[in-house]
Image 1 (cartoon, helix red, strand yellow):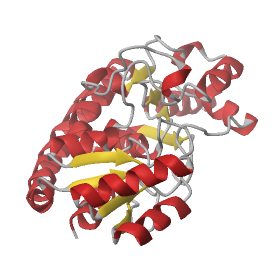
Image 2 (cartoon, rainbow, N blue to C red):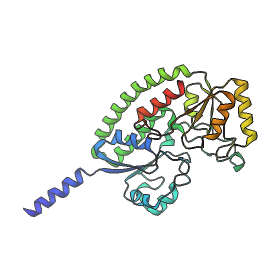
Image 3 (tube, helix red, strand yellow):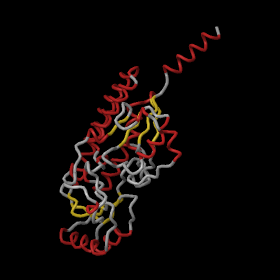
Image 4 (tube, rainbow, N blue to C red):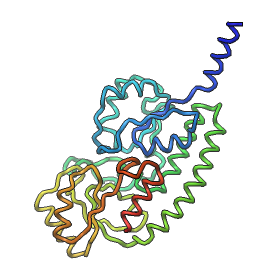
Length: 293
């Protein structure tokens, strides 16, 4: 009898075992939770409060990766400075780059801003293209589909559950996109300045023109000369909006605003980045509200 109970407990624990999913950023974690439901256990590596380019590869993150069955990364070089050393130390073949358990979200996105040539003279560029595609909500469903298909392959026992959740998520997200598109339509043709080329996918989608960046080149701090050039451009083109991400310094944007009469709008770059953005929908709603107010 005792052996039978032990065998039943073993089979039960195996049957209801969750897939351990690790994501690099919070927005990916939210998608994984929506698709995985109770069949997955999701953990996020990077705090949304930090610059996504420069996450500290803390040793405390290694055990999480060591136990992972699946890793979902943004890709396009965004994690290049911090994820590889963690993967090396985790030594988990299940989630090695190119393995069955590794998901590169950028592979389902048509990347923009691909550099003609790669050189440090052009700043901290990404050879594959701009990695900040998550600022466009239309990119969420393709990523969700990729995650659902990967989970279905890794955990075929729950394939129908993953695909059903994907179908429900897609229906709900498409309804949300209609609301988002209607809201942001009022911004069409608007001109803005942004600190970093962080919102290019969003701006391109809705025909909003970024006339300049506060950074002269990606990852390069602005010089006094460049700041004056931005001010001149804004005055000549009558630009009244500066998009400021939460993690770059804010003094420069404030100074430019004081000289041009522009308004600085802090726009989140990830779920949970600022107060009131703890879900995918509130994240994008905040973007639309602040950009178009």
